[in-house]
Image (cartoon, rainbow, N blue to C red; front, side, top):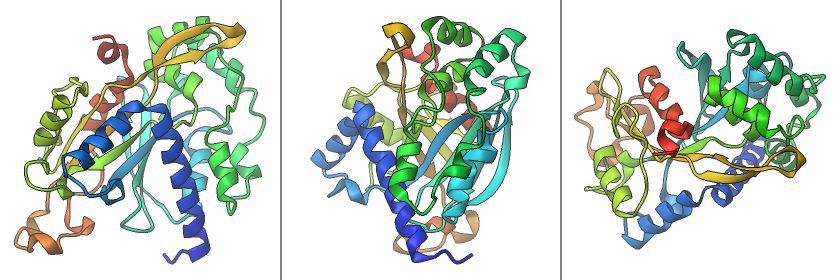
Length: 303
């Protein structure tokens, strides 16, 4: 599928805006990137490949994946496999990018109808404020407008009581009711880094040496059943969040992920300097992602 250069330029504006605000909100990003430059792992942070970015949504009318995906489908992303997380009551899909230099996108959606009636009522008291699909009113050719939309509240600021009630049943629901479409994480591709840093295990050691706290759910290294995708992540930053009526609470914000994609068997004999993204294991793995989700959960953030 051919995408116009104008759409790709707009996509660059949207992705740039997402990363700029994300870095401001997640101090670990700056710590990690600065350490990578300081230790000569990369000459410049622009040399780092962003494997994928992730978003969380609510599965309710006029919102959810059906609404959110319209933005990135417009810029040439293609919808790929579906994943189901029974225990967390989530659906998710990933989207392949129009260019190899763009990150994949992973979008998850809470199955709101699977929650208790009490939690559903809380969520709908907020999401019912959205009377029509907000993406339909956007000018998708205006990068600044899309950037602003992705950082704009869709419903009123939640109360501490509602947040804490949701937290008891679904930490994902609590995260989304406050954080909305904020970028959940970006992902450093470690397989393209120099020797001694090009595996998740080796990169984890570098991270911990620099004081970064890692998600231990399912082990620090999450490995797909086929062994082709290895992932790890930091524990989400705790942010001072202002709720309704001026109340404050420290809650989970966003985090950083790391991915190692092995070269596919049929390309094992390719010289290292000829290996491209298409030669490596693509897609995602539900077993890994299930544990990565917990980077924002209190089982990790309160350790």
